[in-house]
Length: 247
Image 1 (cartoon, one colour):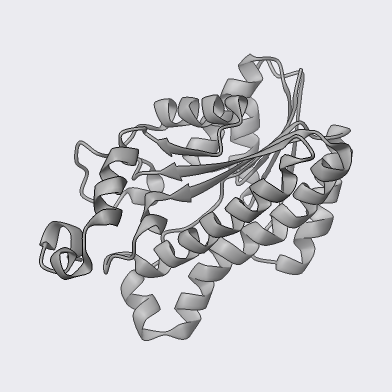
Image 2 (spheres, rainbow, N blue to C red; image 1 turned 45 degrees about the vertical axis):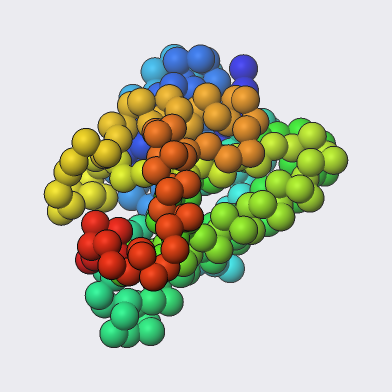
């Protein structure tokens, strides 16, 4: 039985991850912004040793350290934690208004860091634990269609690299989960194509990567090859290819 903390548990992907752990008989603590959705996810987690929940708004950065400490106390320790919250935001709005840009950076970078600091400190002290953080392939290269969101995810990737090396000596693993687009409510307004993942296999990929303690996982895995090409394309060529540089 593992003690598992899921932050952002009401997202479609995180809810699937929680169900996987419930089927294993793990002890779960689920945190999210919407109390009704949290209860619905908890009801899906039949088989878990125990499920507890807490409603929280991760945008309240000053409250996140206490939130993490309460979660760990409720669980009686923590073996694995997944940070799964985020928001695509409105790219065009973030180009016209710093307030909108700041909101995206706060949601997708600063709030995550404010949760990771107390989590990392706890696991480092215990010399035990697995951290998983959902980022995005958007963080691998800036593209006009989502570069504010991508900036937050790219910076988060760098933060996780440093954190992973810091915690290595304490036997704590940090897994950067670089997701491609997934067919979820967050992407309801996006035209779907063959590259969109499905929530259940994506969640299974997340759990496998965290179990194995791999440093970085592209989910689905084919995105590793795609993003290798995207990252290595010279900028002069990149700017002339609408399928890469277009909105």
